[in-house]
Length: 259
Length: 304
Image (tube, rainbow over all chains, first blue to last red):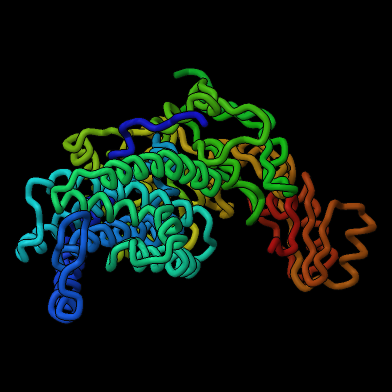
């Protein structure tokens, strides 16, 4: 594939930032409130039942076990939904991509700008969320900058995956399919709310194929200050995953847009 | 510049088995206004989409500003302004924000873009709307805004895809007047339309296409005199007698049943003859228009 991406993709990214800033008060809401709801529900309602969870050779509280997983889920949702529903609205209803394609921008730059924006949105949401989690005393501040970087990396992965669906669906309703076949199972079975070790061996292997498992592993390791093999493997997995899905997203969108 | 702005040779575009554009060739001179006319589905939009690098050619060659669209698309696109058929503005943003966002796609610095935006808004009588959101604007304003935005990069070629479709008469005249002013400034303009009055008023040269093929090419006046003549005679509610009379004289005519149209170079004499012989007939001698050429070439049946 010919590489036709220059720094111009930033202009696409800036376009989305401009729109985001127009309604920042609404955009800041979900990452502020979501962790509050989850931590309240699981911290108050659930931890009495569970008490502590084993992580490596540590005994950790249930809320501190799920706090990094909430960040991981939030990264997945922000970038995946941005590059499915929101990108589709721009492409199909608002004809934003059509306007861009009549300018010096290439399709690869438009889509790169979109995916990088999705990842940025995930990183912004992660930052807001970390502040909330910090109030509960559940954040490892020394790991915070690295967590934001990982949020971006994870956002690229889920955004590119979302973009592949955007290139494939005919109508916006069809996004419900990847949401309940891909997003919801990952949300539940990626070692987010209970340790993977609780699953049967085959399900553990299956979970290891999923990107959210690795994103959760990395963030949990960093937040507990454990720079262990899971963290290293997780970062490698995410880099590799990006190296595959990002070019596929570009190619599929080119095929969809260039007629 | 001096050389042709667009040299299109044997353009073809297939979508699967369907041929949208079939062997279309034309040249556009700098400073001229060139029109592509045709009914819906004729291939007008597909043709211009190839010119602004949106749609790759299936075959043929296309040079814009002397550069090949296949290899220099980005350079070409940075010198073109495009006003697409659909409203492609950002509905969530204000008018000025739309300019700022769009200017960045051309790498235009923010302060230059801001100044240019105000000039263009003034030019299209929109300056009082600069803080308005696009969603609040009327159809005519939206269209003018899309044209204004297309001018942000000071294009050497302005492409307008059906610029006045769906506008009220006031808005249409306002758009025409601005296009004429741009033309007077020496801008090369390419427009598609299915309004003949629009083409006759604005275009120096045009081509009429249907079903992907060129039917005729030339200036509005030369097309009229070539295909119709200077005048035509229209007879409404024609009687059987006059139909027979016209047929006997072998005049070039079109009989639509309730209406008879006679095309002839010596239409004045024929009109006098008819008027003498059938004074009670409702006949009319009028100047031929581009619309007559268009209907003659593309037929009168509905296209869709």
